[in-house]
Length: 253
Image 1 (cartoon, rainbow, N blue to C red):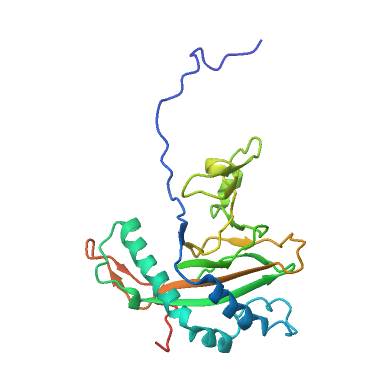
Image 2 (image 1 turned 120 degrees about the vertical axis):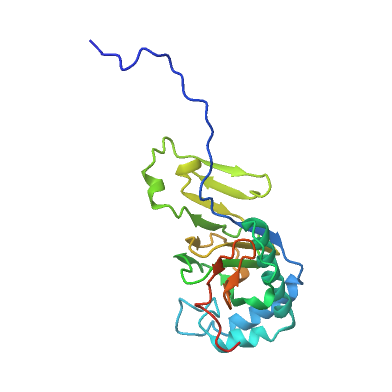
């Protein structure tokens, strides 16, 4: 005979759920001449195609001379200023703090360009010694692969998944996202960027660019990725709390 655990009918508590420790993802369109930027990056990064190092011939990340050459291009200063200003505005708005003494000159931006062709891809990684990372999508073709983000909570996989599902979300700010799992079991988020769009996220978040499946021999995907850090200690004028993110300060500045 089966013993009843409780004689009380199904009666859950009518409470609420608070999404603690949410990971922010910023999305916006940057007002630049994308065709001009694409042409410059294409020329800059293509100089690496004859390199013996086939793992890095799609990016100038490891090439100081090429990155510094690119920083002299007319579009780069506008790009840098816009990204820094956006970060400052979001820091004030999202963190609900008074950083009235913060400006773009307090922010260090380290940027590099990527020119994906054929089967180029980027393995899963994060940027652990910086604050904010992001990408400006200069050229994105309709069959480009989305950027894939991973849940930073290693315990999330321990929750019961039930039937794993994927669904597309088409409402701002979730436009062009495909999500695997639900709620606390959300394991992966795919974001399909559009041309001219900028994504920004906490640097600890793991992400990857899957290998292109395009059959077009002329396929290309061009982007500018970047990391942001603080050049000096900043003080929240409301709480007096210091933000010390100067460990990647550019010593040449």
